[in-house]
Amino acid sequence: MVKYHSTRGHKDTLSFEDVILSGIASDKGLYLPDSTTIENLSNLTVENLSYEDFVKTIFIALDNKAGKYIDDLSIYPGFSDSPEPVLKDLNKSTVVMELFHGPTKSFKDYALQPLGAIANRRLSELGERGLVIVATSGDTGSAAIQAVKSSDNIDIVVLHPANKVSEYQRKQMTSIVQDNVLNIALEGSYDDCQRIAKDLLSENPFNRRIISLNSINWLRVMGQVSYYVWLTKQFTSPVNVAIPSGNFGNAYSAWFGRSNGLPINQILCSTNVNDVLRRFIDGGVLEPLVTQPSVAPSMDIQIPSSLERLIFDLSTEAKEFYAQLQNSSKAQLDEKSVGTLKSIFSSVTFSDEMIKTRITSLHDEFGIIFDPHTVTSVQMALDNDSSLPTVAVATASPEKFGNVISPLINSFTESKIDEKEQYMTLSTENAEIIEAIKAFI
Image (cartoon, rainbow, N blue to C red; front, top):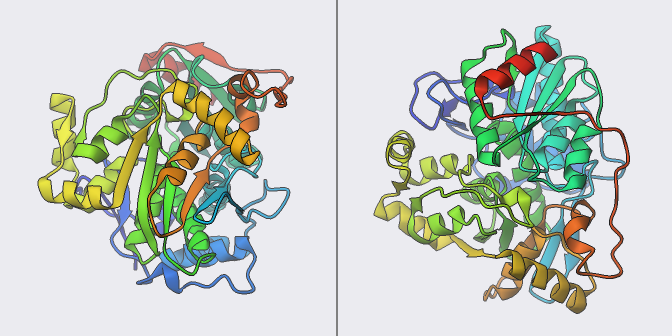
């Protein structure tokens, strides 16, 4: 039986039933499985299966206890068409995998739709009402709301950084006006939102079961690993993947799949001016700086939460690393782990001007408009010197970033959401946020 343990060494373990509704561990670590119920994800077959049924086989392969929750469950209820990813060839060696055809037009739907459905079923089984607390840099919030807004068993609170997401992203969240949805704009950065969400998950001052739908939750990784399993089935050779990287959940999912037999060779992580990941990959030092606003706001992150799982995998511990980070504001991987990291991962930083230039030049070259995040992964893929195919992950629709794209491309018409908004703006003081949430629930 698979058990889930903390990256920081706490002895308590969780079952699959427990990890569905989990947040962070009691020692503030993240949960990881102590094993998988298969040795090699590449053994799975897509033959004669819909994408939804294929994903169900992956969940069950990763933990056979998942079968109880998903056998007869619709895990992509918000998709109007098949959730199967769309592949587009750019040239003989470069392919784009589009993951933005779900209800909120971002890749987050691929993991949050299943997680929302499974969490709702588990709460129904327990006869409890859960409180979801989510931090978002732009896309997770709307995808989480869409995943649980129709739930009979879940209230959701979304924290986003005020004036630091696109108008379209904000309105995707704040135009959902329902009794079980509370949107809060915080006067700070995404890292402030993430820190506060983790504090609330850890302290739980609400006398309710609190659930995370951020990539803190292990089922997010399961949902994202699924499209990498599917992707590798579309090729006869191993592939490289290029991923726009913010909180590192997407890149970690590629790494986890690779570690469990998927034929993924290199993992390329593009970053914006908040290039903490590029610096970490180059030298093994995690040193957060001040978050800078950018035209690619979903990557405006200085403390990538999901990186903790990779650090654990590389060095078999994360407790001392994060203690060092807390005490010294930076932390260093050991030399052997750095060697492994650099043998698989690489990264490039894209300034705002570079992003804008690439949006225009790639549109001119390929006739495709890429959003400010995806354009960085596409450029990394095109620049990658490899004999193997490189797949750029397209994480969001350009429709979400018309404010950036419309001044660059005359033919692009900016989309608007003209519905009523409802949200509150608060400081980053925990007490103020707790009071607002208590009034909501």
